Length: 67
Image (cartoon, rainbow, N blue to C red; front, side, top):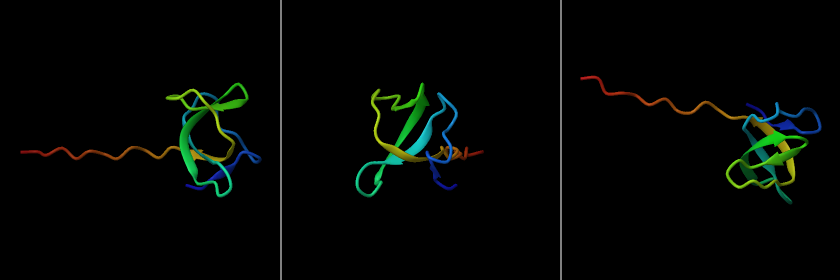
């Protein structure tokens, strides 16, 4: 997956995505949602200066031991 600039396209509203932002090196990465024109962190309820986003990857699959 590649990072998408918010200048190029925004994600669907209310869909959690990975976001990058922060100053000066974009080293902050969070899971956030885009709602009504602003970014929000579902756990904390705050926003940051988001510059890029990408869809969340699928979670790992758990192998079940079969006996």
